[in-house]
Length: 138
Image (tube, rainbow, N blue to C red; front, side):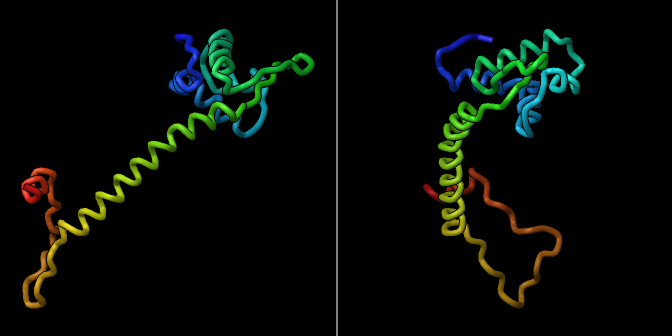
């Protein structure tokens, strides 16, 4: 893994691996010794240690020794920062989709059929495509 001074990049690089995400999911339920974290995986102890080191370097977990056990604990600060960064884009897409819905309801309304006209039974009215919508806007 490439080292960087940008904590957000380090966090996302650590989250990119499914094994590390599974470890974080387990730690979300509470502290756990390294041996317990390694149980679900068919990999060597050094491989698990490397995953834990990546998570610790990203600030996502902290490790400490209790008696003869190495205990890992989830740290929420870096995850919170990643969540806040992603939340900006969630808000952007929600607003964009809301504007699209408003536009479609306003501009591409499907007319009601007169009461005497036969109703379609097999499928819904055709959905306007981007191409037909662009033509209408010209």
